[in-house]
Image (cartoon, rainbow, N blue to C red; front, side, top):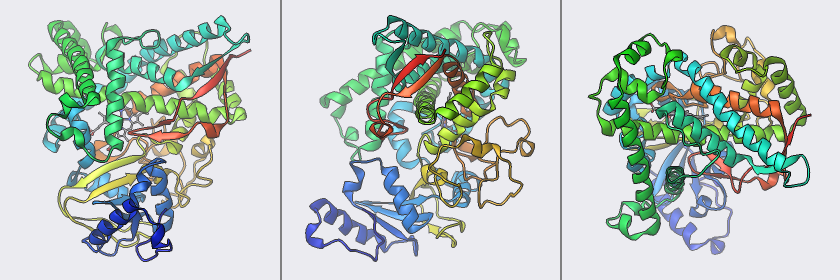
Length: 530
Ligand code: HEM
């Protein structure tokens, strides 16, 4: 479905009305200010039927790593180049805001870090980042373990019930990972036990309802919800606002409680990072205790809501795709299980053991390479900018007028045939081979010597060719939390169970909103290991 602006090999008579309309607008727009940038013409029909990031990949191979996508009344610049990505995310980060994404997320996250204006962001980021101290994350390993064990217990019970007359159960692991990640984020961020692995509640339903609406808004291209009265007239918008109220009420009462129970003794422990002796080591406790009781309730609520949404589906998706990939590669699953068996005992997991789970950690990052969450980062230029020259058809830099919307395609970068050998293949081992060649042309390898203390490959080691958590000042605050959480959950699952897909891998289709998830679940046959 893609074509360059100068090539049109489709007979005009076969074009649909929508295509014609969009191409007319495209032509009006394509002579514009982005100069000599290659143009991919998207037809409106490209928005339906398959996730947009697939089309962006095809156009990347055809037009190079910086191109303009003219889509109906809108033009986007699509970037799939590490040097240009580094410029936008790090070197000139404050020339950009979150554009369309902020518009979609503001009604949910208010002035939380993701959609916040730059002034609010600067202030809140300074306050929140210290909350994710390495010792806080270590303290969270207990939460990760407890919640993962609940999931394991549930799976064991399902197997025990022997619904299939065999020693296995058939279960949608994507749904189970979603519950698990929700429980972890609730306890870690605001010390609230959703216990969604074992029960349903109005708050849990409201969280899923809100996520569902956020996804609808990110894939529905006409923001009808901004029209007056829609929140009262359109049933799904009414439901959205009532879901939001349920969550907000819950968060408000947690904030009130945290403020009322603030104690100087806890503040001292927090100052010394003595998390082990705290009954409540959550981020909310930190934010309230360290900043005093006068911190603005509305802002706190926006912060918590942002982390609830940002840290839930993303982690669930990483676990889902890790298992999807392992289930198709039994030898890699056995290799991972052998590692788990040699490192973990039946006692509680600690960080030293996690450091030894190297293969499990590489599986997680390889799953993030193949299925980045989110697959696209969104930016809008606040001022005119000049993009640097990059690779693959983007050798010259381009002028960017203020207001330009940009899609940074992490999916394209992570599957770029120019930077990865066999880019579509699942090879966790690729990260463990350090190459001394520092050049950007090819993965430089995960060499811990170049980054002492780094337990996971990251964007710095990969010179922005690998961006699982973004980069620069707006990089994910929860990256280490999420990585350790996923490592614990995957290790404990593989310690107990063998997992196979119920059907063929092709049946597990991808759909996307903010994250990439399956069309109708990751249905697996889960068997207790012998
Ligand atoms: C930002 C990915 C887990 C909180 C981001 C960004 C990415 C990302 C790519 C950058 C977005 C951009 O530049 O536009 C992920 C992935 C996760 C994960 C793949 C799981 C595997 C978490 C968790 C939390 C969290 C667990 C919180 C507990 C945030 C926040 C931001 C963010 C608050 C905004 C940061 C800012 O703008 O300053 N995440 N994330 N994320 N993430 Fe995560």
